[in-house]
Image 1 (cartoon, rainbow, N blue to C red):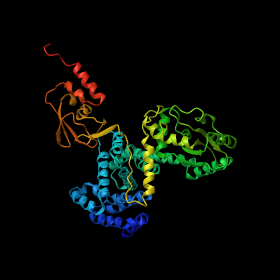
Image 2: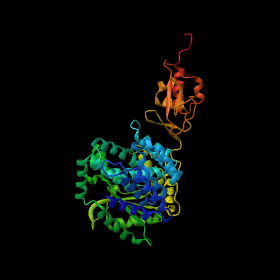
Image 3: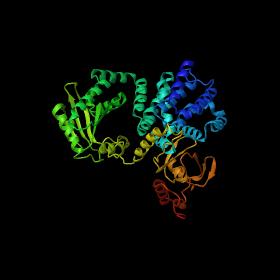
Image 4: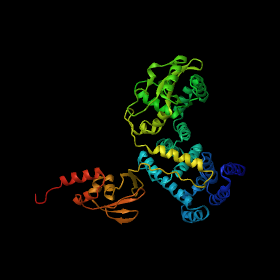
Amino acid sequence: MKNNLDILIKQLIEKIPQDYQEVVLDSIAWAKKEYEGHNRLSGENCIFHALRVANTATDLHLDTDSAITSILHCILSDEHDENRERMYEEIEMKFGKEVIDLLENLHMINRGTDSDETGRKIITRYVLRNSKDIRPILIKIFDVLDDVRTIQYLPEEAIKLKAKKVFDIYGPLCSYLNLEPIKKEIEEIVFKHTKPEEYLVIEEKMKEESLDENLLERYIKELEELTNILDYKPKIFGRIKSKYSMYNKLKKLENEGKGTALSTIKDRMAISVITRSKDDCFLVGLALEEKTKIDEKETNDYITEPKPNGFQALQMSISSPRIKDMFVEVQILTHKMYYVNTYGPASHIAYKASKKRFAKPTDSFDWLEVLHKQIINCQTLSKQARSVPIQAEIFDDYIYVFTPKGRIIELVKDATALDFAYRVHTKVGHNATFAQINEETKELSTKLETGDIVKIITSKQDKYPNRKWMEFAIADSTKEKIRKALKNKPTVGK
């Protein structure tokens, strides 16, 4: 076991800039001492898990402070609660205030994702909104990745809970943060453990079609040859839909009466060809028509006639006789089209956020572009600077506060304790007298901030809202409930 630990340390240190290797070694020594006697369900000491998380962070070229935070993150477990204040003092003295801030943010993320009474979408939005720095979210995802890789040591109920969080919280977070390979891995593992029969059915169907990375590479190579008509090499890349995604798609198609054959999933293998101009898109399209078999029903010119959400691409379904009699989705588009499709209203994330399959996607994800550029900036500068923050204003039209039981309540920006009361329940709003915010007594007009813990103190007798409340009610729903109650209030004397 010691050798395994030495290997993990060596792998990590080799990826740390030389100027910061000593401080990372110090953090490992400190963590080994503090984690002594604290083992995971697998029986191994927490230091192994912490070092694997740190290695993932450095594999993705995050900065040194992210690596140190990853090494120290296990102190956030309940086992360390009684020593946390002392630990924080030592960490700040040895490794700096920024590491403390990252750990505090990570603690906030744990607090939010542990809320069993809150809708998963709200939890995801809360985590993104309250993270002044995105690095702790990345570390949390790396933490989950290692947890999932050792999921076999968890009790059955814990596996089900972990799976739900992976599908509802961490998977979407991976999509937001451009971590699709991690999303695919964690979803595939929990899918295999929670629905083993369904997993095997999909796996067998994929084997029957030889649907694997080798087939994908052969199709990409074919497209590289067919695009030799251009005087440059276009960017060509592809992906195979995950087993979990195919399972969900087959369920949807089955409900629509379209069968459960894998061939009903038109994008089970999808390839993108990025060209320099619209004319080049059509030239490549003509080459595919001449050299491959085309499914006309699944071929659409969204360049000449874009989708209502702005999506543009020449979308084709092709089959190459030289490779396999299987249709593959190919999107041919320019760099600009790809950029708009990735970050605009037509992005996959915006499409998913629309909830309905054929709904017009939302355009409220402009921050994705900024966020992805910030992550790339951190990866670029991590060799020169010990700490490179990753910051973006996300869901800044909302705030997220807690009930005393840990439920997260989403409110509009600048919302007051009164808005909170009415969001909890109309009757709570009508009977509100004052609020306790972070255990301090406050007026109902007090504005709330993300992360506040709010308790509403109500009258023991039913009452009607005060007309003056309209002056500090922020949410339209709050105002409407007050208006309705006042309108129905009996007139004195009648």
